[in-house]
Every structure is written in structure tokens, then in C-alpha cells.
Image 1 (cartoon, rainbow, N blue to C red):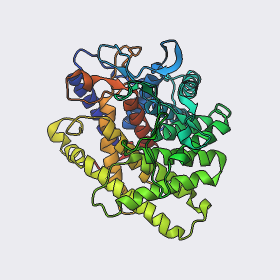
Image 2 (image 1 turned 180 degrees about the horizontal axis):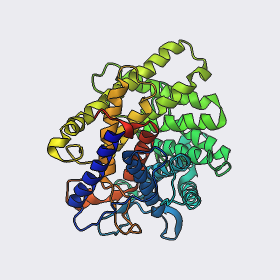
Image 3 (image 1 turned 120 degrees about the horizontal axis):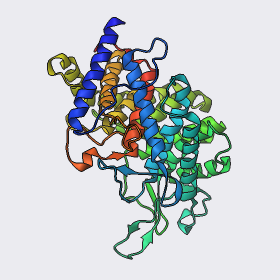
Image 4 (image 1 turned 135 degrees about the horizontal axis):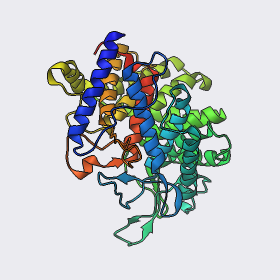
Length: 441
């Protein structure tokens, strides 16, 4: 315990020194506020405050932008300004998911002198849920749907086609997937917030987008139907996770079947690959699928389970290869005097890697738990060190996560809502898994 405490205080000092160098002219609050919970170590306390400050940042970003209640401030720059830009429904839904996850996580990790009032936070989340539904959740109306009755998460009509010079409206598979993830997550907190029939109709869009072999089309446009020019790494995992969560809410097995077919298709296409994509959303979906697989009573359930596990381990191995460089740097930390950092300094890839590792921790067969914990530890440490802290906690950027550290350009210093979303989701799960108490690094 003494060793852990010493390491914790050293990390806090290093964090402050490093961030002062990366953000010149910005003062940092050395005191993180609140009191340690029970036997909470200094490292765990620092990580917990990181989550609280990140959650409060997201809450501050839910504003009456352009008179529309519940819309997020999407990008925030070092100057404290933000600019009007195309609004991404996937990132809105992802931020809602993070906020709902925080509401469920909060009761286990609150302390006196807290920086977040849960009632206010929950109400802000509800506003963001309302905006998600009123601004984006619309029916399919084009004849290309061949009579399918469904709802989709439509992008804002900002694309101009060169041939017709006319606006077109498109709906992405990932929008429906993350829309379901967000809405079902908050429905578990505030039942009745979203009509179950609307959730079912959104699921119908995902079913409409799924092909016979289990793969998905990525994009549908109202002017010409399916757009096969768009391929997304993450959409199938996002859609599968949304369907599993809808199953958890309704217990309708048809949603579980869609998710299983989607993940099994990914598993089959990647089975022979020596290096697969770092698809953290597929890991999040797989984690839940494995818990409910027995409900479907599929033939050869053991074989199906092994296919899911093998695919999951393939992704985990790719994640670990990505963080090995940071792990080596951490073991040399006493010599370098710097916290771990990926070579490009980018925060969100590290955050999504952490989310994936945490999801796979419960089922990975080929990767040792210790190796996964080591990699999760260095990923979380980098994210915690990257958070922007101001002496004035009312500063708009306080608690935000920049695109990258170690760079002085405006783009690297910008904060986007999904940077914060992924970071706090990963660190919340790391805290719950006891990662801050790791003593082997």
C-alpha cells in the first residue's frame, strides 16, 4: 500500500508538470477536490476525478445552441471559441451513451464536495436524448424501402450532389446503432423516456440494412437507396451492440439474432487474418452477446461461442500491439521522467483501445489477464494525464480531452465531444476493474 501511495503522488506531480508544458499559460488545479473514498488510493482518486471532470464537461456542452435545447457544442478550441460545422448524429448519440453510463457509475464513486450534481446531470442528459429524437429520428419515406416501416437516424441535410445540385438526406447504420445504444441506456435510467415502439422501429432499420450473409449496408439515402460506396469499420459493431441492448430491454430474441449474425460475419471475414482491425465496438457487442448466447439455443452453441471468442482475441491482440510502445516507455519512466504517451500523441485511439480491453477482460482466452491489465493501465494513465484542468473550474475547456498532446497546432488542441466520451467510458470501466491498483508496472 505504501508503494502504491508513493507511485500515486509521483504521478500527480508528473501529470501537472507535463500538462503545464503542453498547455502553456494554463494553470492547473493541483487539488482535485472531494475526499478519498474508504481505501481509495491516490491513483484511483485521481482517475475518479478525471471521470467526474470529463462528465461535467459533457454536461456543460449540452446547451441551447441556435435556440435548440439539448444540442451539444461539438468542437471547442483553445481560445474558448467554437464554430458552426456539420453536426454528427453518431457523436451526439455516443456522448449520450457516455452520460448515461456515468449516471449508472456515479453512485459507486461519488464523494463529498463533488463537482457534479447528479440530478442536474441527469436532466441535461434527458435534454440531449430529446434532441436526438426530435432532430434526427425520422421515418423512411422513399419507395426504395419497398414498404419497410422503420425509423432511422437521419444526418442533417448538408450534402450537395454534383449531378443534381440538390440536397439529399442519408441515414447511416452507425447512427441507428449508436442511437439504440444511447436511447436504451437512458431508458434503463428513466423508463418511458422513449416509446418502445420507436425503439422497435429503429431496430427495423438495422434489420433492413442487414444482408442475408449477416453483413450490413452502411448508408441509405432517400434519393437513391443504399449507398454501397461507404464502408465503415465500426458500424456493424455499433449496430450489434444496439440490438443486444434492445434485447436486454425487451427480451425479444429477434434482436439478439441480428446482433449475433452481424458479429459472426465479422468473425468469418477476419478468421484467417494475422492482424485485424482494432474494432472496440465489436468487442463491446461480443461481451454482451456471450452473456445471452444460451437464450438463442443455436445449433452447435459451443462452436459458435468459440468463433466469438477467437474473433475477440484477434482484436485484443491488435489492441495490445498498439499499446506495447507505451508499456515499454512506462517501464523506463524513472529514467525519462515522463508519463506514457503514444508516438502520435492522439487521445481517442488510446481511449477506444481501453474500452475494448475492458470489454474483453471477462472473456479473453488467449491473452493473459495480467497483460491486458498492464496495457489498460498505461492507456488510462495517458488519458488521465491528457485532461485539461484549469484553476477556474468554470472555464469551458476544464475537464475536456484534446485531440492530441505534444503538438501546438489548433486542431490538436481542439476538444470534440467524442474525445471525452471515449476517454471517460474507458476509465470508468478501468476503475471498476481495479486497474488503478496495479502494482506490476
